[in-house]
Amino acid sequence: MSEHDFPGIDGFLGTRATLMLDLLVLAMFAVMLVLGWSVYQVRYRRRYQLHKWVQITLAAILLITVAMFEIDIRLHGWESRAAGSVGGSPAAIVWYSLYVHLVFALTTVLLWPVVIVLALRNFPNPPRPSLHSRIHVPLARLAAADMVMTAVTGWIFYYVAFVR
Ligand code: HEM
Image (cartoon, rainbow, N blue to C red; front, top):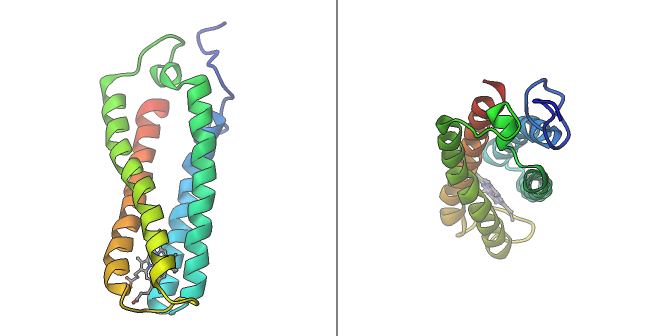
């Protein structure tokens, strides 16, 4: 095994990350665009049904992607790749940026299902503004902001761990 023979499949972005990490880092760009578009549709165009299905699809796709990513990480680890040598340990800043990222990632994973289940139970079907708006609008804005912070801190972690 050479020094750079890391476990797992190499990605295509030319960094030390795995294929799954590269896919996830790019997928988060798409998630940001679709999320922004969905909120625009509901806020300015009043397309509630469209917003509902975009949000549910987004959550389902993300769940599958994150599960695949977790399996990749559990199977192959990431520490050698972050350290830059097999058996090496990542720098302290890599761990700090991971912890900051995990705060947002974990709260997002908890918050999104809550927002979706509450919306499905409490908005009329087909969805339109109702009494539940008073809970949904602030809570869903928080959930959306949490997702944006998850993406931003995830990109920072990727850079610090696998590019630098
Ligand atoms: C995690 C998933 C979701 C997120 C992040 C989200 C995000 C948002 C945001 C940010 C707004 C407020 C837009 C504004 O600033 O005015 C909004 C409004 C709305 N959402 Fe969602 N949403 C989600 C899921 C759903 C689901 C599943 C439904 C339907 C069952 C739904 C129905 C609505 C409706 C009807 C409004 C309009 C409320 C009003 O203006 O009174 N949302 N959503």
